[in-house]
Length: 240
Image 1 (cartoon, one colour):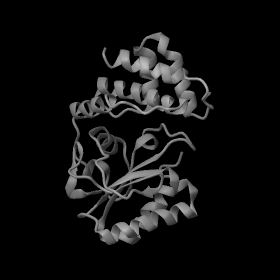
Image 2: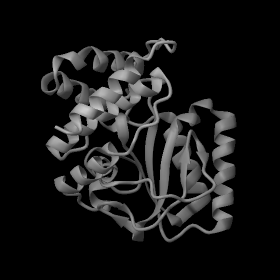
Image 3: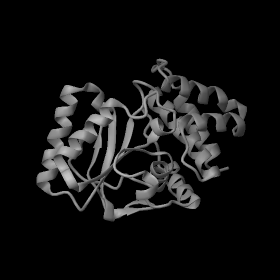
Image 4: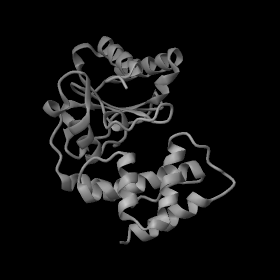
């Protein structure tokens, strides 16, 4: 696995051309930085740090940049990330709502998407695609801040209308529980390993099946096995 995916390098180069000295850093985190990337399945999670708040004109140009990259290179649909002014960086994420992109496209409204566990991942494991090393740029995040952010996400009711969605939620559940225990950013594979050691054996088959689906297995959508397991696991494990 190369250190920097070509599509991420391409985005960083175009951002440098568009933003010039306003571009401070492009950091690649998530599953790629933790060695848990699944080709064709995983997203490429980015943090783009800029100097000062982006203007409406700059945002329009960024939207065009993203659309052009998608048209030229379909793998750009894997790109997800946030544009955060350096001055707004906090251990818990961003001081204010910021522009962000999902599935390669700039979304029309800013939002508070970053959390402490994202920031900890970017600082601890992130790869500098442009700019300084993440540890030199990003604020330090405490273990308790990671735990607090993950606990909040765990108690959000999941939207799992399909078996594939339920598989993703099961993996997020066990990854989150692992992070609450350790206070560290956690990959999905680490969450699976943690679950096989720490949760009741009756849940192991569901966790392993969820991981198989993540890695390319086809879910059986006319069944609701994982959807039922997700509901029962949440009811039991989040009350433990």
